[in-house]
Length: 532
Image 1 (cartoon, one colour):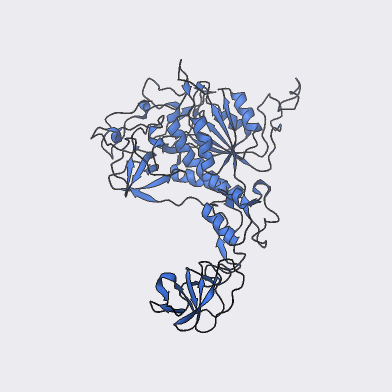
Image 2 (tube, one colour):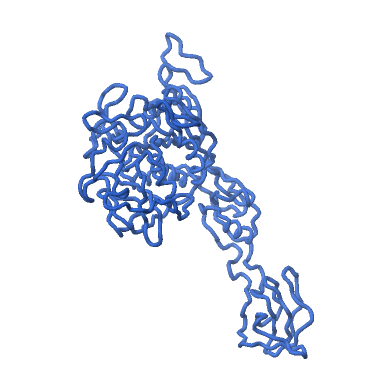
């Protein structure tokens, strides 16, 4: 996968895509035209092609198919909406410490012990089961005093956890620990360092004493029944602490969406060095932990060869909420994802996205009941007899609710683009979480853009700026490996200090200590452009 050299100035047409690196298993035509992966995905039959998006021949028939790529913002919104449409709607009228009595079967909430709820999403609002604090407490180690001073220091003290300390009389003081219950009739708490006791046992304050000082009054943070957090909140360690303080032992949480990963391709090796035309599989090791960081439970990672029947059977039998495939989403001779989806009767919600890298990505809704291709029997059924036509509705894997398929391109950085464009918002929607709020950071350097499509560029956030990183070609991972996020560069590019939207990576830690930040001069790596 090479990179185009000597790109034109920003604002002018970028170099032809033909030399920029085709998707895995695609080929560059000799006339310099678009590769199979350069063709946006098909729209409804008969729909006109978008400007600048040529028709692609159907690999099975050779008939041109009109293709139209979805704009990048619309693709992300469609993915989140698809997830939301299947997310649970917790009914009202139930106790906040109990799971809802009824809920859609696909995403029925579960009561999870606090440690097990970490990383999941609240299926109901978190409501305070008690006042916080539940009694007046001392905010400091010091002296609880009653009335004006000086005060007579009592010999005993009040410790945290003591049930009911003796009330104070006017002019009395007692030592008190942070978090201890305030004795009745206490005027204020004086910090230890702000008072002293003389040799006669009298306490004197070194500063004016304000009634109520350093006392946390009952219900200062919340009252019983107050809503603390809305449904859909991600359960973080801080949320666990708040829930525990508010009296919870378990939390109603939405189940994490299940994901099955299908890595496609005869050319992939799982160990050793690339050899004899075969390459190492980078996506099999990368995608499961990434999907886990996005809130999914990865139930299986399967490697399949370039066989249409094998792919169809794997899609039909899967019971995961989401299937993620790698490669095979374009129009090459062994790209079988589109035909398999047609045989399944799937709805293509997004079929190609106007983004580089990764524009052959797709999102499909699989039917509740899968169907067998003509002439084939479903598992457990006898093949159709010689006189009986094949049943196009032969059941394979009945599902209680729709499933989804996210088709990622085979090039590694293009797959990351698809992951953040389609999989991340879909999983947020399935988990009942709102769409991620966008934010912008100014660029430190100019970034070339594609003439028609949005471009996603790995960046490292340094101080007030997002620094574009080297090695941003569709088949490269060196840039994303040290990135904090991807900059969303609109068609035509973005100039120095221009603000651009940033897509955070799940681990989002500022890095860049590996020499990725050098600009390399006017013809250096920041000016290398590689689209797919």
